[in-house]
Structures are given as structure tokens and as C-alpha cells.
Length: 457
Image (cartoon, rainbow, N blue to C red):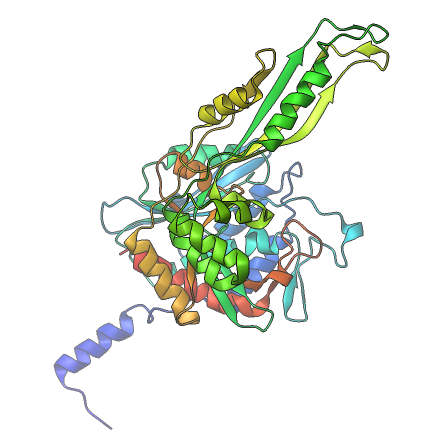
């Protein structure tokens, strides 16, 4: 028997008593959390979000979180969940974002029951499996493992799960206001890795900005009259003229830190004429030929400025009467940093008809892009390259909106850093037979473990 000196024996005893070596969470445990989550149909109107929040709370309590560290707040038929892993310092906390609600799914249209998690052919099928229960399950499993390991971050880590991201975002607004003094937010509902059809990772998207969603109503009223006595001042005709002007108008091209850094990388990925156009625009946002080429491609037009399009019209009250009222909805996706009122005023100028009122949706508010912080970029690079060395990381701006949007409004830098890597052909979020690959679980757990350990130092 080998003997150990007193100092070495003491060290060995201390090591044995210390938490286990840092490691990601168990993939089987994370898979079980994901499957259990899918089985709770958190669709708007069913009142199931509080049940899912209680389930996640139970998982974390079993890992050692105290009741005082977990807060479920009912809000109508939905709820929020906040769980805190307390830090050792007084620095501002890091937030983890995700949403528990999912969009509706009709079982008659699906091959499998959308609210029964089915593991088949290397995938887990079910509504919400991708959007957003996969990364929520990874975050919950990672926090549970960190707690079990006795991990003590310098910054507190606060998991914030909303309950109506897919609809009204009332819960998002409440949490973003309450936690507006946080250091940053890491969102599992944005970003992520793209895998090519050959199975090789192609790039990782880091979402650091979202365009502002804003609806504007065009409205014109008129005394009307009998259709047998037409007048030049026809509400529908004048509205139609205004819509034609809006449809033909192009807002000035814009660029920010995200597009300037990200578009050249996208250009390298796609190549060809569009790749050349994106690269030239990133170098010179006044390049007319590049602007024209990008504006002709729906996939990329939203990356170079504000876009506004008519989406709904309504007018008239009888087939044999001149219209007394006509309205239209203009949906705009506004470039980060541009004020909603500035866009409304520009639409009013383009229309050039004082009889047509341009009204702003009262819920519309602007959100700027988040800075590409060196610490965030380094942590993401480390986590991504541990899985795929040298993989391009593309700073991205989304045309849609996630919970990050409201946190950015309060000045909290927010980043979509999902751990999910998948093929484009496997992405069915909001669609039929939504699914995620089983073999994405273990790398995603390593991804979240790496990010949280590095950024909470």
C-alpha cells in the first residue's frame, strides 16, 4: 500500500470533499426535461404556463435551489419564472432568457401528437421542441448541474422565463422593467448554429439586434354619398394612391456594427453575385449597385435598412355607396436606433396627403442593437469553437422580435446565444412536425456550461 504524507493526505481529503470537477449537465437528464416540457401544452388560452413553470421550479429545487431563490408570478392565465443562482460579489447579474409558451398546433395536421414528445429516427418531435423548449431545457439542466457542483459565480445568474412571448409579451415587459439594471442578457431564443446538409457545421449566428416591429394605420374619412354620383374625392381611391406611394418608397440604406461585421462573413458563406453585393455594401453603404441587388432579394433586404409594406386594407360600407371611410395597415420593420416617430413622419411625407392620417400603434417602441462586447464575443467564440474549431461566428440582426427586444429597450445588452445546432431542413419552428436532433443535446449543454462559467466570473 502506498502511503501519503500528512500534507498530501489533507489535500486529498479536501479534494474528496470538494464538488465534482466542472462538467456539463447529463444529456439524459436534459432530454427528460425537454420531453416533459413538450408534454405540457403551453398554448395561449389553455392556462398551462404556470404548470410548466412549477415543473421547472421542481427540477431546480431538487438540485438544491431554495424556495427563496425561485419566484413564480401569475399574470392572467400565464406566468413568469425567475430563478437566481447567487453570486459571491455585488456586480450586476447576468440574465438567461427564454419563453415557456408555444404557438398552437392542430393534432389533425401532424404525423404525431404535437404535445407528446416522440423520439424517433434521431429526433425529438413535438410543439415547442425547437421554439423555445430545447434551449430552456438546456439552461435549466445547466443551472441544476452548477448548483449540484457547488459552483459560486461572481455575478449572480438569473433565469427569467416569460409566458407570452408568442402573443402579447406582457410578461416580457414586466420582467424587462424589473431587471432593467442587469449587466447583460443571454437569450436561448436567438442565434444558434447552422449545420449543412452534409452534416458539417457552417456557421454560428450571434443575435445582437432586432428590428423594431411597428404598425401604422392610414385612415381617410369622407362624407360619402350615392355611388351614382361619383366624386373625385373618393376615400378608397385616395387611399390607394397613398398605398402605391408607400409600396414604391425605399428608406435610406443603413449600416451598424452588426451588419458591418456580419455581412462580409455571410458573403463568404453564400458567395456568388449576392455575396459580392453584401461585401460591397459592408465596405460602402452608398454603393448603388450593391443596394439594388440586395433590395431585390427578400432574404437580405431587411439587413440594410427600414422596410414598410401595406399588409391590410378595409374600406366602404355598402356596394352602392361612396366610401365614408378607408383604412390600411402599414407594417414596418425599423432599423435599430431609428425612432418610431421618425418613420411615421417619413410615411406622412411620402404620402403627401393631409386628408390621410398616419397613426402609430401605441405599443410600438424602438430598440437599439447591443454592442459586440469583447467579453461576450470571447465567451461565444470559446464555446462554439470547442465544438467546431474555427467555425465562422456571424453577428446577426433579426427581422423579427424576441424577448431580448424589450430588455434592449431598457438598456440591457442582450445576445441570442442558443446552444442548438441544426440543419435548415430540420427547422420547423411554428410549423408541422417540429423537431430537434437528439445528438444536439450534449454539445448544447457544454455550450451553456462554458458561457455561464466564463461570463459570470
